[in-house]
Image (cartoon, rainbow, N blue to C red):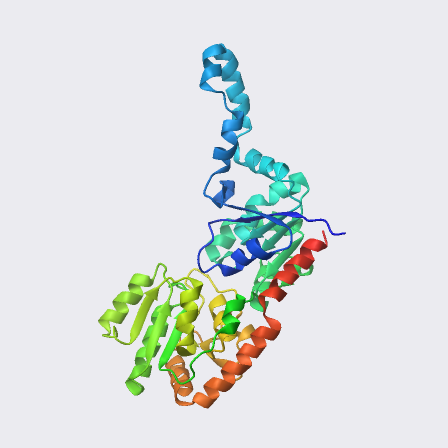
Length: 381
């Protein structure tokens, strides 16, 4: 008879619409799942309530007692309780109160924060890296010592691509602790029937430096010079969204490039149905930030869309060049434009690549396989 484990999932920030993989961990991993988020152990629960708010009323002195007790007595009690309200003490109490048996840290930064507590309480720690946490120069430098301690004490470290696995080894993670486990798409994407005769290309991803949406737009402008009937839908927001808007406006592409902002999954799927090709020009950002394996690409392939993207990070792991899509060098917008034109002009190739991509994702990179790998790690403990 199997025993249900209590698993605490922690992340440095509250999960967003695009972090579907973390939501799947919370909703679908085996066990009773608890979730907290916060930077440097300033944790909140999913309702947004801080641990300080949860525990302070249970430790504090009521106004009634303050009226009854001499000042020096409740002052001493307050000092004693203050020690119980440190960030570390609060998370330790939360772990004990909920009988947590395993901690899964989403992002290396969260793992670094909570590793000392896991060691103190002798609770196994699994750390799931995702991208920026394994590539940003600033993050790696800032968390150098924390990562070293975490790598020494964590049970397993999960990487989402071969490139990330090598990057983690370069910053000190022992090879034997690394588990390669690429994301899987939500099952809804496998039910999509795309339109291979459509005039729409689509991009789904945040407008960030490593996804370089402005390069996708510039490449598409070159496409329009030969194929003016095509249109590009771009789903997502982010720090470069205004840059994308201004670029589209300055190039006079308002009728050809549709910036749709951030959308929920059901709306993303509706837009995927209207497209024949997925495009994304990922690259290594100026600060070192790099992709893990972009979930948007995996979801698009699951829907049956071929991909035009770059030889970057984990993308070649899932997009086989000239088999399920076309890949170009980072920053080469001419090559990207040529790849988009080639696909638009050969719909038989579009269909062939789309079918092969869907088969690859549904056989190898399923959400079930992704979750099973994590469940297998937890079951070993």
